[in-house]
Length: 488
Ligand SMILES: Nc1ncnc2c1ncn2[C@@H]1O[C@H](COP(=O)(O)OP(=O)(O)O)[C@@H](O)[C@H]1O
Ligand SMILES: [Mg+2]
Image (cartoon, rainbow, N blue to C red; front, side, top):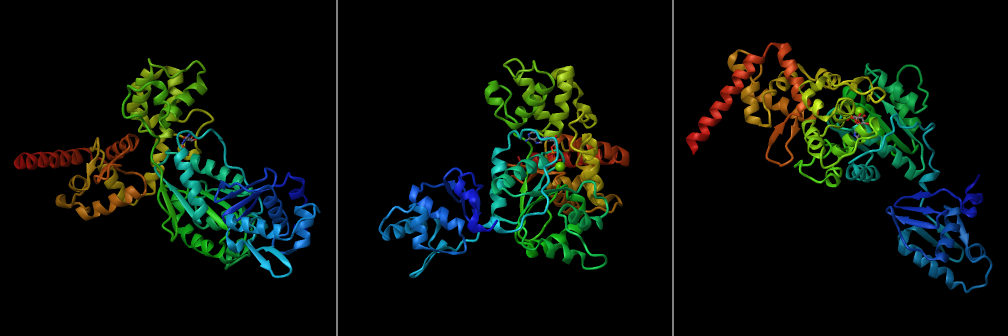
């Protein structure tokens, strides 16, 4: 169907049409500018309808009078009044006057660009996203502005869950198909290109030039591509993405990864755990406003319909969320146990947090089957030095500064290979890879999530380094105290 015969626009049931910065909604008789509905008079809307219908073509004054005024005889300057009103709303350049002839909508509709060949639904389970409204808005805003947005954060923090919601919303907003690519099962870097080509329905030539062929095929296609779980494939993805970002400007990319992809123009959004109330003495109605409490209660109630958050259990619920660091994966795993054995018994089990496994049917993929798997995966992707430094941070319950970390994790003074500088570099990299968190107060302190610390403890034990690290920790803390006393 050519644009001139776009009957859906006339019938009033038409789909929204998107232009840069504005959106025309014939079915609802609405005009949105930068996502916000703007008031528009009935006649101006009719004029715009005709111009949109014939976008890119010249519409004569007679045609406009016939279609927007339905043949009612009016003075010609009525048209220029409506055109002026439209230009005020949409910008002067949007409608061109062709002297003596008529008017032309000069904005190109994004809906006229080719779509991604085959859309894919986001992966199951599709559960309600809790406590992430502000984060979701940030992701959607960034996706409107930049070509690549990367969600980073530790395993189980909810990157995929947020990406899923952003993907559904963005595709619905643009009324465009999107592509969801889960890269977790891709083990060999050389399979990245073929996996993407397959997902995007692009046939690659045999032999060399495959990357060029993929980017060329994407050319002017528009739509959103999610790359979920990129952390182990950065090296293979970087050159490909760099080409795609310049060679296929119509595509938007949303990546999830435990660390940034480090590409030019990338917007990195680091996801914090869900919010936990600072104090357990809140009223239930206030406590449930926090994402961690909402998630725990929702999952417990899913398994046990009698469960209610009330004055009697709110303190224990908040304490449990706090001990789980607000980490959604840990909360979901604990919730399954709360439903079965009660909240007090679960508190008692928390020392073995890493053994908590996902309740049936709700695991986040093989890697998230248990919290231990999640950390094994992250730990396995570290360099040997990073692994060593990570596990040696285990004694720091309640956070640490870089200097203390250097004293405890370095071992060159005892004949080892790790000096203070290596510790600093590894620390920066561990923050980047979401295994160490930076304190939110800007004080330059760092901390490990409790589940990360448990993994560090297990790794420290297997490496046979417990005694050495405890000794160094005790010495560093004693030195600190002595200095503080001397200064006092
Ligand atoms: N905001 C949220 N609301 C509801 N469920 C969530 C939320 N965040 C995470 N989850 C759930 O927690 C689990 C871990 O989240 P996931 O997105 O897989 O983490 P990540 O991708 O960071 O490893 C999943 O089962 C997910 O559905
Ligand atoms: Mg994920």
